[in-house]
Structure formats: structure tokens, C-alpha cells
Amino acid sequence: MRRRLLALVCVSASLLSGCGLVSQDGGGERRSVTVWLMKDSASQEFLRRFTEDFERTHPDLDLDIRIQQWTGIGEKVQSALKADGDGAGPDVIEVGNTQVAQYAEGGRLLDLTLESMRDWGIRDWLPGLAEPGQWMSQQFGIPWYAANRVVIYRKDLFEQAGITEPPRTRDEWLTVTEQLNSGGNQGIYLAGQDWYTLSGFIWDEGGELARQSGGVWRGTLDSEEALRGMDFYRELQALGDGPVDADEEHPPQAGVFADGRVAQIVAVPGLAQAIVRQNPELKDRLGFFPVPGKTAGKPGAVFTGGSDLVVPKNTDDRDGALAVIEALAGAEWNTELARTMNYVPNKKSLAKAVADEEGVAAMAAGAAQGRATPGTPRWGAVEADNPIKEYMTKVLTGADARSEARRASDRITELLDLDAR
Image (cartoon, rainbow, N blue to C red; front, top):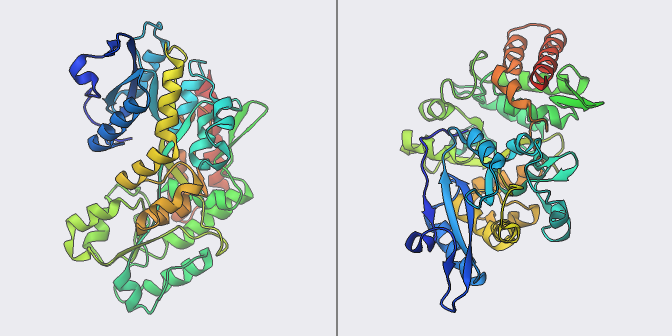
């Protein structure tokens, strides 16, 4: 999560008239719909245009958009969900896609399954946003936008190595990376504890980080499928000099890529901007391709980050809240958001809207195979302790993968069970 200091901004015509109910020229009353959105999810210009259009097409509604900071947002949302329905709280809230379960667990979100199936095209949503938006087989989170990892590569180093096009399969990726790993170049910089990237390889093999059976969640890193995913990670990571005992932020891989002769990293496309800021000479030398899968016709699975929209059960304007979600998540404004912010739209059929941007197009191709962390509200305890990282380091330093995977799986099970008590 991005962490910033707390601030609130009201973006709407209500800046002039105050938030709440205001009189129309005709003497009636307009209803104010309060929307919490996270800082930097959308530009001020986008929100201005969206507000103007929404209020024009919904003459009985005013938008009160309040920008929130990630720091402390969990407690703030929980407090809002528990508050008495006095009309002062939010009617729509943007939440991280993996946060939906923890808010839905207490029964304080509106069930939006009917609208999702009947009106909003649930079957076309990106799975990495739609699946974590479910709780107990009901849809509470409505996909808004996505971002996921791709491979950022040096076009000049590929050309020097005689590689004319990016790899499309895992086997090709290993071959190409080994070819690039010569002459003082790193074929790939892959930190040893990049567990999000490992997750994609595990999902590609049909494995999971944890599974639920009989209402109990258990770690499954020791399954045959998950072990195959770790084995591929080990092969790929060895074709560079990434530290085996650190993640991609220690040190930040943008700096490593900018300063050295690194041919590839796995990251969100937006990281290219940080790379170019640190080394302007790379401005026209960077390319992007989806993380390769096991076959050429299907990119590899990737962890999908992004946001869903939810409606508190204590809203006093259900119809207004649904109207906001329908507009924000609908094709017109969702496409506009993706173009403005370089996101992946919430539906696979909208990927063509970002096809002209190489990095976003690569991201959109991967997003079709996107996944999220296990759908338990207690997964945060696992990430805080993170036995996955320790497991990865031990395997990369020569420990027996099967025994270490079993140890890490037991710890995941323990954390989920302890946190549930």
C-alpha cells in the first residue's frame, strides 16, 4: 500500500454550495452522494470531468468526492461501516481489491451480486479484481481498475544479443535470459524474495498459496504444483545477480536497472518512469512484454493489484450509490480512466482501449490471467509475518525445497488459524 498523510478533498459542485442536500433551481432538493476515493487513483482533471458529466446526467444528485490517504484507511473504513446511518458517512468507497473480504466479513457491505450479473457484465470482469471482490459466493466489490507486473526490458541489449522478439513461453524465456546473461550483462534482475512473481508461477502450474477445505484455510506451498512453480523461479533467478535474501524494494530494482547493464526486470510498467528519471539515456531503449506462460498462446498468471468499489450497508442512498458505481465502472468512464492513468480497464473486452500504449497493452494481456491472494480476511497476518519470503531464500541458498515448503505451509496455516481465534 502507498502510505501518505491523511487529507480530505471535496471535488464537486458542492465545493461552492456545501455538501449535503441543496436546492435545485426548480425548488426541489438534490441528494448528495459521498464517495471516498484513494489518493492518486484518479487525476483531479478526470474527477472534475466525471463529476460534471455525472451531475448533468443525474439532475437529482450531487457528488461529494473525498480523497483518502492509504495510511490508516483500514481503521477508517471499518469505523465508517460500523457507524449509525446518519447520512454523514460514505455511500461508495474505493478499496484495494484484496481488502474486500475483510470488510465484507462483518456483514456491513451491500450485496451487489444481482446488479453485477444483470447489469454490469460480471462475466467479462478481470478475474484478479472480480474474484477477491467476492465473499461467501456473493459479489461485494465491483472492479474499477487494475495494474500488474510485466517484463520491462532493454531493447538495445536484446538487439546486441541477436534477439529479435520477446519470448512468449517460459522455456523461451529461460533460453533468451541465459543468452543475455553474458558480456557483463545480467540476463535478469530478480530479487530472491519477490513472492508476488513467484505466486504467478505457482498459479501457472495449478497450485495455490493456500486452499480452503471444510471452512479451514491451509498453506499449500508444499503441493507438487507449487513446488514446480518454485523450481522455475529458482532457474530464472539464477540467471542474474539479484540478492537471494531481499525483495524487489531492497534495494529498489528501478535503481539497479537504471545503473547497471540489466536486461530485464519484472515490474509494473509505471516503474519505467522512475528508471528513466534516474538514467535519461534509457528513455527510448525500454520495452515491455507480458510475463510468459507455459504456452505461446497464453501469458503467464500474474498477481493483479488495483481497486474495487463497495457500498456500505449503512448508506442512506442506495440508488445514488449504485448510480455512481455504474458510471465509474461502466465502459465509457472506465476506459477514460485507463487512458488517463495508464491502468488496465476492469473488463477484458476493454483492453483494446489501451492497445496503443506498449506497457499498458502488455499489462492488459497479462491481466486476463490475473489472480489475487487467497480470499480470506486473515491473509494480512500472513503477509505481515511472510514465511513465503523466508522459504524462498532457503531454497535459493540450497535447502531442500520440499521440506522448506512444508515448514512454510505449516506456518501459513498457523497464522490463518491463530488470527481467526
